[in-house]
Length: 380
Length: 248
Image 1 (cartoon, each protein chain N blue to C red):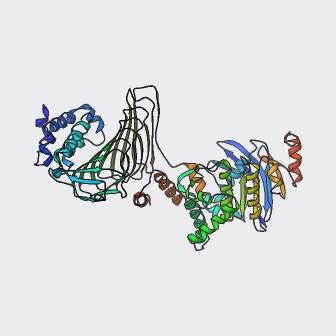
Image 2: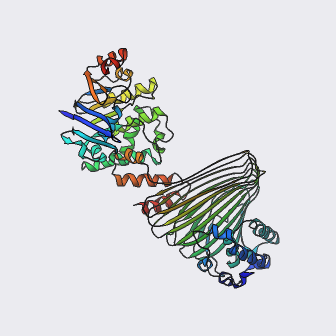
Image 3: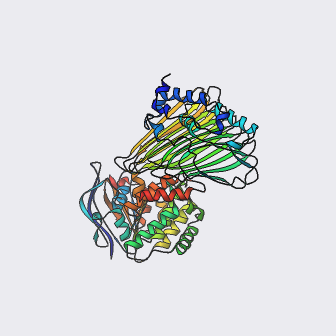
């Protein structure tokens, strides 16, 4: 196996992390090595070259400092990996080993291999207060969230560092549970690697509101698995890329069970010589009859040298489905511009209003105003 | 005084001649109606007055309050007091009606060297007009025309007219798509706007609007020029006889 001589692999010296005791790290290393060499990986990392990307990852053994609000309310247990019970350990081990197995999740493997620890957040019942996690420093941060049957929670994740941050969020949403998830990452010079995997059991509801600004290198992978009948996912996101920034988003929604519904609406703007990649993939499995999936990704290139890539991918293995997919890269509508200037609004102000409105269509939740302000700043 | 004076106006759209020597003068305090068959150039006239890109003026002149209108950008035309109620108002999700209306009014105040209106007074004014037009004030929070019915869009145009108080309002088929109740509401709005120092140019297909907003002059536009002008009774005659006797 060539992984032994790969410089990226050599950088993966295993540290004394608590999860070493229960996670098969040799298997992880080997899986990582295999994935690193595969053609599929080269395709998935086409725009953010995988070669040498390990070098940009957080240092081995560096833990991202987290600030967590809302973890001491009734119904929440937030436990560091080192302090988990045997039962917790078994659950987390099983989730980390099995859930990530099938997919090509280099980021997850790397994050786990380098992190000196992690967190389990175990949620029961209906939470009164949102759980707000802020990532305050460079480092690796695996977080496993379990929403138990019938639970209902709001989770806010916000980055507050420009240092190299590797984020792994694995959410296990059990039957009849509801998760509302807000993500915000607005540091323009960040090195940020995020993998989010959300598994939805039967009759669950998942809502995502995401706002991302390009970074020095920012890669955001979102993998949603509708794994039980009646699961519903609604994902919305706004993003903006300024000059010199890079934003690589990989979205996968898998319908593994029938009678599942997914809605994805993402709007992005390139307002400088930067690069945005949006790969939106919908995968409907053979036994997932009556799945209903729709993805819309619209991009505005407001700068002649803004590079906006949008690639839709559909894999549908059953006939009895509804699936809609739209991806566009364009300019502001001339009709809308004329409407505004005919009322006396200057063309500059009209463009600002329209581009801001275009992003605001995909902004919602408690962090919407923070994101709107930052986007507004970029749009002038 | 003349609000607008259009002389020998020739306009091409995509190289095709649409207006062929149109003359029209509208004085302060007057309401003029322009009627005419499909394709006669009615909407072209509305768009060319507002300055929509893509309309090439090849000959003639348009003086608005004594200024050469064609030399002005669309926003400057609005600053001077021109308003177009669109035939097909666009939907702009993400930009709220409130934000749009405030930006419009602020831009007019700014251009005229006036202080911007404070938000409380602005809201009171907009709500007052919305009530007059039987528009639920909740619409202010929604995106511009987003999810509005045809009738609501047209009422929103009239709301903007009443808010911005232009010197000349060009209404491009504001009556189309309105049921009889909505038509009355819109007509009341336009009638409340009428004053001795402003004017209305109404483009319409149907006589029915003119029984609610009584015009001083009715023009018939055919093949890009005015072929007949007369009083309000001309509209009734058109209703009865159609256009053919004028255009044949």
